[in-house]
Length: 152
Length: 213
Image (cartoon, rainbow over all chains, first blue to last red; front, side):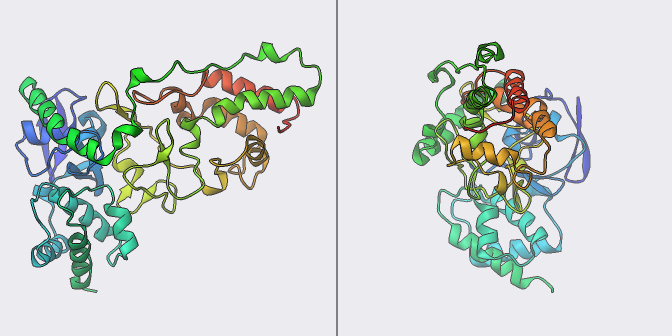
């Protein structure tokens, strides 16, 4: 039995300690917003936050999470995130959508730390999140738009 | 759990297989069984017959150089802002940058993917990890330099993290992240010999005057 804090709530999970966090989120807890892409930390689809920092849940055993707070796409919230979601819809970023929860987790972490990111900041922060539809120009535009819409 | 396992493995075959082939990543990750046996380090006893201190010192450093210039070490002592990866020393995929502190860019940190220990993703490939996973500072760049240049650099306190020779020996012989090079996980060749043997070579090199090739 492992106790995790997921989306601000303590959760007891039955999985073995070496089970990847992603499997627990999707299989045991039915939090299916976080996606399985490659299982090797190469694509970013499974990105969650651990204490606000992006982490690849497919290669993070639950034993390695410790006391850090897990945030998934289901729990990603706050004024800054609301603006980000609005920009995402306005720019019509999504094509197939499979990578998008990971993209939003990465973008939210970037904006929290750099409220007005440059193209270079965005490229560096988002490079680990692959989009097979190639929505990168719209992802970048939506992040800029969200940055511009934020109260100074 | 078994159902989940099967499900995930199927998904991995369908999704990751296609993605990896499309991106050419498999080239960077040869199967564990494909690499030749790791080369070893010659023990100190094989250097004791070199009477001249300088010659012995240089010979010891050249032997230690098999470790220092091994991909396990050079990949994270890059000359640019991007680490290298794999036995073939390709630029790291995905694109990652050293950032201000050597631990990655904002919101794309080394620890976003690299945990406190290696993670076996498949039998043939692990995602490497260590508690302190990060790049050596740019002043400690080794990639693209000769062993003689690296040797001079190691002794220069402005380019070795302000370490005394004793601290340098301690770092080489006992540091945990350095030690990862001998337990790098599936899919990559370990550094030659052992960290202990490497530390002994460096210590003997220092004791014989720390001469450079």
